[in-house]
Image (cartoon, rainbow, N blue to C red; front, side):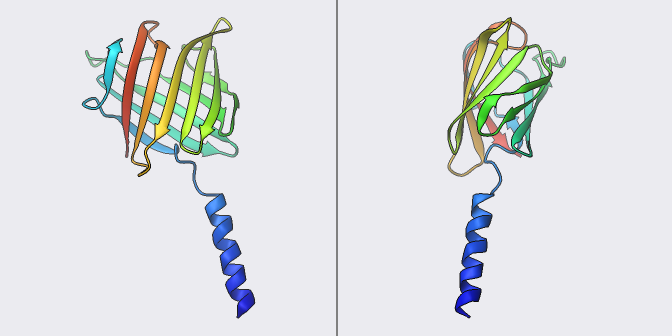
Length: 152
C-alpha cells in the first residue's frame, strides 16, 4: 500500500512537470482593454499557439478597420527560447526568450535588424495575455501598444 501511494505521488509530480505551456491555445484580441500609443489597432485578431514537440507553432491572423485581412504570420519558436523558423511572415526572422514560466519575449527581425519586440505575460488565471509591443508592425508602420488577448 505504501508503494502504491508513492507511485501515485510520483505520477502526479510527473504530470505537473509536463503540463501544457501556459501560452498554448487560441487567443482573441480584446480591443476594449488594448491601448495604442502609436499605430492602429486591428479590427480583430486571433493568435493560435500550439505545442509541437519542444517548439511553439504560432499563427497570427486578423482584419484591419476596413475589414480587409492583415498580413498573417506563421512561425515556430523554441518554447524555452532561441532562434525560430519563419513559415509565412512579413518579417525575415524570429527569436524567443523565456523570461519566466508565464513570461516571454519575441523579437522579429528584417535585414538582420530587430524591428519589433513583443513582451508577453499570461495572467495568473491563464485567461488573458497582455503583450507590450514596440517597433514596426506587419504593415511596416510604427507601433507602441499594450495589447490584451482573451483565451477562447
